[in-house]
Amino acid sequence: MAHPLKTRVIAEARIKTDKISSGVLAHLLRTDLLPKAYIPNRETRDLRETLRYRASLVKVRTQLKNKVHSILSKNGVSSPFTDLFGKDGLRFLKDVQLRSCYRQALDGYLGIIEYLNALIQEVSDEIDERAELSQQAKLLMTIPGIGPYSALLILAEIGDIKRFPDARHLVSYAGLALSVHSSGGKTYHGHITKSGSRWLRWILIEASKHASKTRRFNQLYNRRSTVRTQPELQLPGKCCL
Image 1: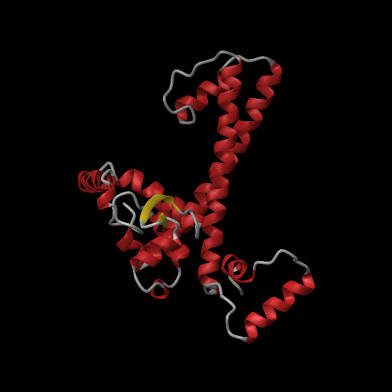
Image 2: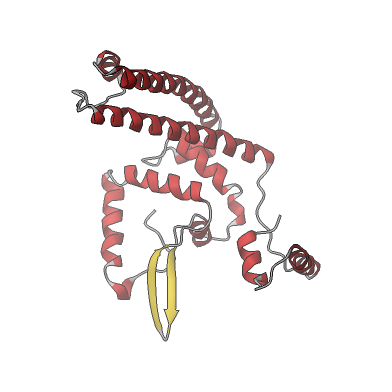
């Protein structure tokens, strides 16, 4: 399987047709210049699907919870509970007085949320069991901010770690390396590239938010942030994660 981004860089053309594109691909393949994409094994691909399935369920549930908040906002109702979808919060939502149209919508959303909770719990239990059977996952879970889901997602998105010659290549694959613009002897380091695995980048950023609350990682973050405020000391291609 060809790497689409790298292939485009090599074979970019103003005139593009299926005939021209197939000819270019055939030429690259014949000359052994066709950039290939990494294909993980079947087990890893199946694990990715399970983890992404859970993420999609959580996303849908979040959208429905936002709709519930919207209904309360439209009716000028404020919740007396911090966790609106906890036991007390749900009891409040089922008893709150609303006009029939809003009551119908609220009951429908709550029913779907309850069903999604069951689905999420089911797949989460499976993920927890798989994490317990993986020594690599258990090792990752010793890092603050990383649980069973995060550990398995990191492992699944990286695949074979040996395909990366060093840590910089892994950071680049996650899209967490700083972009570099160099011209006329001047070098500027911008935002992260965001190229590569968006799932790996997302879970590492989420984990870093929790890890930064611990003393050790908070000190590391502050030290790296101080270094980056000094242009002459910027470290290209590195990330605080």
